[in-house]
Amino acid sequence: MRFLLLSCCAPCSCAVIEKLAQEKADFAVLFYNPNIRPLAEYQKRRDENERLCRKYGVKFIELEYDNTRWCELTQGLEDLPERDKRCSICFSMRFERAFAYAKDEGFDAVASVLGVSRYKDLAQVNRAAQAAAEKAGLPYLEIEGRKGGMQERRQELIKELELYNQTYCGCKPRKE
Ligand code: SF4
Image (cartoon, helix red, strand yellow):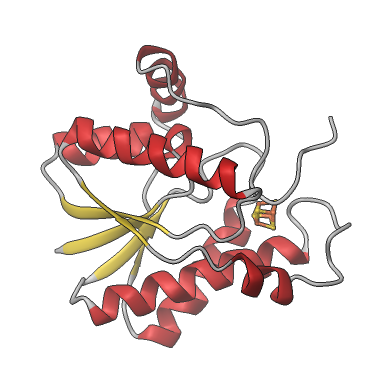
């Protein structure tokens, strides 16, 4: 099975990419994140994700940076907290594009690391992914990125590879 791994950034995807590469899985990383602002931050995360893929010999694909459309879709929801409706719309937009690309390019399935961070509601991510999968008629592969030592390995790799590790998800800085 040849699949796409939708990735938001290097720190969330490093342990998953390492494991899949070790298992010799047939996959490519897809970077479709029009939610990340500002543009310089988007470019920094993209470059770091690409560097990670080069290290593991994994193909890296970048799609368009359509932040204008992302802003239109989430208009009026700017002040909602993370995990609320804005995030559902954001996940749906990204998954729908990922599945459409997968279908056009002959991939058999889509997976993602969008729910790896502890700030994310994994069930919310999976709901958006499954809805996009049904729409496209391709399966969504749920890949473990949290349990079984994956979080610990992620932290190790962030240090080991000196990955750029941002302090907010994508659209706005967290208030902590
Ligand atoms: S917090 Fe992250 S997932 Fe939620 S809307 Fe912003 S960029 Fe998207």
